[in-house]
Length: 301
Image 1 (spheres, rainbow, N blue to C red):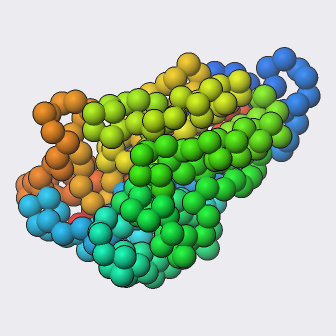
Image 2 (tube, rainbow, N blue to C red; image 1 turned 120 degrees about the horizontal axis):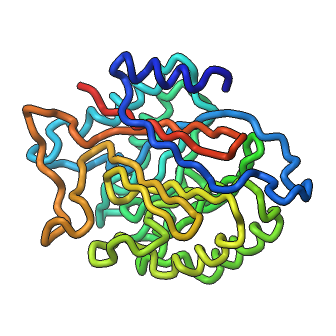
């Protein structure tokens, strides 16, 4: 994307964007001169939205629970340069024990998301969408819960670590992941989208994947891997060896920092600072040297 840095700087100067986080992968695409990194790699950017929890009600936490998602969609539609694609990283809807209500919420979310003018929108489930029925209702609206795609020299892998109520990826999907990775060069640029963190961020709050270590072991031999996830309702950056992990803010309510409070409870709405802690992000892929520039955007009333 020509002029992407200038565009980001403009957004910051205009007061439209938040902090920029430069996620630099440590090695070049072909550090040993083997020729394996010859796939064409272009600049591009995508938008990540997460944890919309459509159907949530709680005025003390978010009195505009039905308004924040439409506001974020309007903001993305207003971007001067549209992203190459948009991805929702789970918890599209708020959990319910009623299967009919679950489908109603998924259907409403699906209809609202169709308001995005960008035709390239990808979805993945969160545990609120999928854990109670192993992803059955979610799949009726959005298709497979895990899949891969390629875009401008980057291999994207969508991992489902929520359809199993025990917070596992599972042996079958891990075998699928291993087979997919076997087709990639060791210096391939790989992005993983998942809902829960793959590393044990704070298991006491369900901020972990029980067999995430097995997924990370499969990914570790690949030199250029970045993980984007949701679930924890806040921006967080972490590294396991050379693999970088970046969580996204929520569009419904923020949660406290890991272990900062005795219990994991939503942070209450502050009328003096409405929408504080809510937001979405742009991620710009830069080919040389391989890096991802993450720009956080707030929800505005």
